[in-house]
Length: 263
Ligand SMILES: NC(=O)c1ccc[n+]([C@@H]2O[C@H](COP(=O)([O-])OP(=O)(O)OC[C@H]3O[C@@H](n4cnc5c(N)ncnc54)[C@H](OP(=O)(O)O)[C@@H]3O)[C@@H](O)[C@H]2O)c1
Image 1 (cartoon, rainbow, N blue to C red):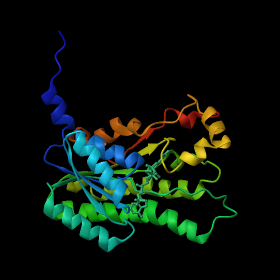
Image 2 (tube, protein in one colour):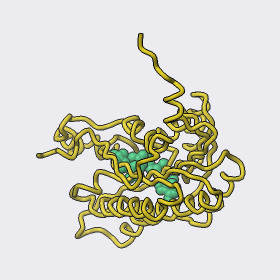
Image 3 (cartoon, rainbow, N blue to C red):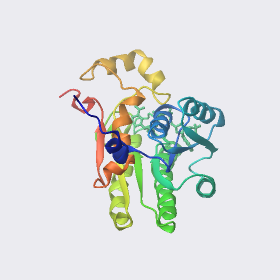
């Protein structure tokens, strides 16, 4: 007879009594990350600019028996983000994990890209992610808490899709910073890792993938399919949980082998 040791599983992956902060939690990968972390027992702080989608995520989590609270904030506003983290610390269980997921896309050939577009993509995907990680780490340090930071980067950090060069650069920079954060905060018990997702259908790319060119792109993938947000659950729960105590400065690519396209 098979015996499943549930106490072993909850020691490895359980997040009871801990707060998970997820940026961009009102949609796509962030919403699913918040649901997965809540299912593992965390109380989840849902961050994003638009209130209604955050409230919807909150409702979905309540419906599955979990706990979550919404905080409307623009992650590029450093002061507002700091105040939000202070409020989370005041009203929720001890901070444990930050999932740096808020991000923006943007297609532009390098000959046409505008200075504003570069500022926007790097501003959200790289600068705000770094400042959020540092603000989170400062609070862990001040509270003598250990914790985890998971930076959602992209397969585009490793590949060079035409039209996505600035986006890819913003994520490659965040992946590089992930290793630097891991190194600088290693003696404080803060583990910092990255996930590089492949193509997963969400608001960021839905219109593109439903266009004829997008359909053609899907057909060129090794398994001719896109991912769903749930595809990241395994990697996310590993990197957010006590089970990843010995993993820091690493990247997990979750792409269904999409990086082998054309090879
Ligand atoms: N889907 C994919 O194929 C894929 C692949 C690789 C990597 N990624 C990355 O995964 C992350 C999530 O993307 P997604 O696919 O789930 O797309 P999405 O549904 O468009 O999610 C992006 C989220 O970021 C939030 N956000 C954007 N700017 C923000 C700001 N200044 N302040 C606060 N929140 C902000 C948005 O909420 P508000 O607009 O309400 O603020 C939204 O909830 C992104 O970092 C993306 O680059 C996605």
